Amino acid sequence: MLGASGCMTALPLTWLLALNAGLLLLAYFSQRAWFAATRAWWRRRGLPRPLHSALFFLLLLASAWVMASHAYHRPALLRILYGWSAVYLVSSSASGFLLLIGRGFQRRPAAPNTPHRRNEPGAEPAAAPRRRFLRWAGTAALAAPWAASGYGYTIERGDVQLTQISLHLGAAARPWSGLTIALISDIHLDDYFSARRLAAVVERINRLRPDLIAITGDFITYRHSIPDLVRILAPLRARLGKFASLGNHETSEHAQRILALACARIGIDVLRFASRRLRAGGGRLNLIGVDFLQSGQEADVRSIGGYARAGELNILLSHNPNVFPYLDPLPIQLTLAGHLHGGQLVIPGLAEISPARLISPYLAGLYRRGGHWMYVNRGLGTVGVPIRFGARPEITRLELV
Image (tube, rainbow, N blue to C red; front, side, top):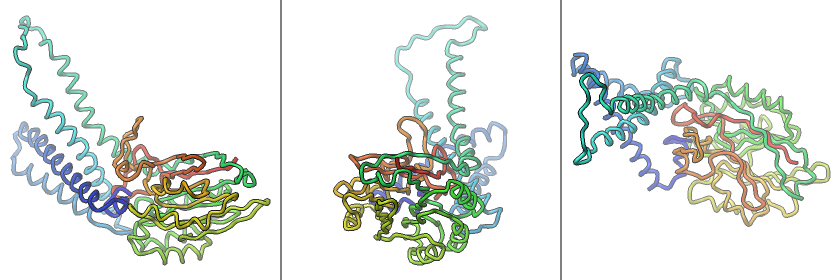
């Protein structure tokens, strides 16, 4: 999601250009700040300045080259280099930004006419404890992005969480009380969400014994992974069937048709502006799916109005959660979505700060507008950088009550 080939496609061109320019400026000034800080450390140890410049330039060049190499099944060494280059770029950009802020405070002129107390001989300056505290606090603040990125790359990225949700969807859903849906999204099968990890997810879903399985797009990052993807997803089992919608990566890889056909061979019904009507126990359920609707096209979701039937349970599969406000006129009780990876890189707290907020207000979890509910899954894989922080990968089990 968070990459030049991921969620960025959901932004208007002017926003995309402005965001990319902002990221480039952040990268430039943060690396400049780190260059100055490391050069001062280097100089204090009497080491030659040209060597520092050469090493720093080589580090940036190697990181840029590794990050620009997009492939499926990279050699193991390149895969490791790519991962840690991503950690370096994220960490150095965030901590470099903090360095710049700290320097801004340091350069503020002292207040005029400030009285200075003369200390006793041998006594500690009055401001020394405060300076020590600020120095330690500054060091901790600079270290935090490195620790967070390292943790997100090595641990959180593979720590798949099971989220269980109970939903009451009104009278139309009453005949379907007890129905269970296993939801996954944004698999992004690649070197960082591997075949082994996806196979483990398939096993966990089958142990849940769901009535329905829903997959809301971005199966792939690269189309070359489709044969492996369908082989691993083939063992998925659900009493009433397996259904999916397509995401922006299927679009950018021109793989919508080939993926839909491959999924059909393993019993996954990809709904492309289409619906399937299910019946059980006297109740009817209309399962509707749409292709990825990018920024400016979300209102087109209303074209599915003919599939949504009043008095029946209607569930929509949409990769993009931004269609949610446009569904108000339609009798759709529940929308299942993904796309944002839960923000992928999130500063925890009340505001849940994440770059993904520029793309959508619907990062993850449960949302409601009147009688219409939406659940946004955090996805399984990553895009852009193979790091998750504050947004664990997720399998969702929804039960209608």
